[in-house]
Image 1 (cartoon, one colour):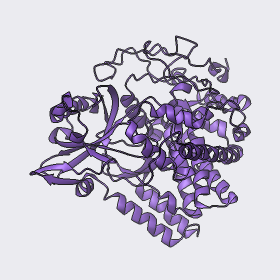
Image 2 (image 1 turned 30 degrees about the vertical axis):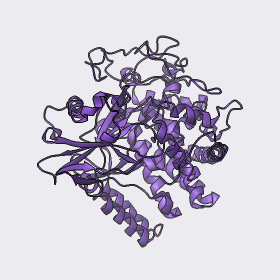
Image 3 (image 1 turned 180 degrees about the horizontal axis):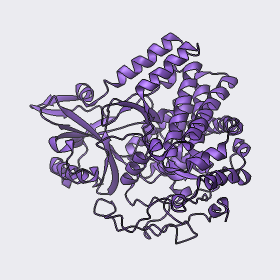
Image 4 (image 1 turned 120 degrees about the vertical axis):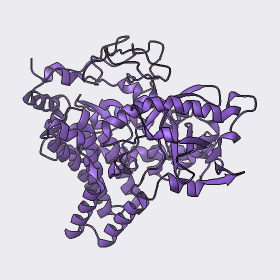
Length: 545
């Protein structure tokens, strides 16, 4: 049987036997469940039976208790295809999903109301914070786009796909890439947000990233020609990096990453070729130096004070609210210190090593903190711990993990714990991950049990200043983001099939540039719809926070 024939499209995912009592999120009008196949979880079929990798029941923190019943590898790997078969698989996909076909985007006539999609998300979030979310989305079409991952997920579901699956970031816009430290204290550039991660079509991440560059270019006043050039540079970089990965050995692909020294070298090469000014190069070096200062000690200096001899996170409502100001009198959370210490012990078990630095730290204080744009309204806390003394702080972020916005279109994760889903996706896609990355299931302040993941708040964190990018810098940044996304996809997905599908020409590059322009138009219409919804009083907005 030809390689391509083994991977014919299967029926839409409608339900999951992983957790029969857990419904798949309802689809909005005009959205239909997407097809998917080699989702890394085994066979996908119609109706009640979706994946065949039903593993052991989860433990009390939502994690699988073992792995003996899980498949050894994703379906295409288990098929043990030869290189030639994988190449054939990718080339055959050009027939069912021509590369030029990715250029088209038209919102369906019965496309869901974008404000209704946002309102649906708001229903499960902290009500008093929702106006802040809308306020941040109102700043510009670009900030709207950052908060509109759920809207775009529905739009992407009807676009062409090659039926080759990777681990998706799920929200791969340009502000979700940046600098951070590895456990070995190297600084690398990589994707840094995985709230929406799930296996799915690789094209969706590419389109999310490319459209964000087009929208950023409009925000910055770039010409249409320059915007198209920036987007094409991103996609070209993705394509060429994927083709390079297709020629690499397996362990080379899994260990490949962009260390900051190589990034600065790229900047230097751009200066030598007169595509980047010396001033822009110095700005890049300052950004790297500034990122090295963004750590727990800096957070403590800016956000912590001594109260009655104890370190306490200083409130700045509604953005930062100390835990004691959130507790309802008479609830079990009146003993917050005891509960949080117990939860930290449970989180410790998800870190996966016998001994860990977390064991030397003790809990001091916690607060709720509003973060990002799209995440506003989800429950997010910062937790202050100290090690050898008060000059040895560690600040953890404990962030709620809800169902991925992709779940309605590619099916539920085999992880029953959404925090574990985020952590697993992050570890698959990043060149190196935070040593404190773990998950927790918490009965919260409202008495409802929810999933969370845990990481360091800041560990040499840095990124591009979107409001300061000029065309040369944006072009370089697009190239770096494109190659970084390709590295992430190549680790788990069939890099050889994707590379064969993309080919040597720029057909796909041009198609995605056209898609990005069309989707940026749609994003502007959706942004205007939010403006109108706020003006009419349909939704509340609080700006400036």
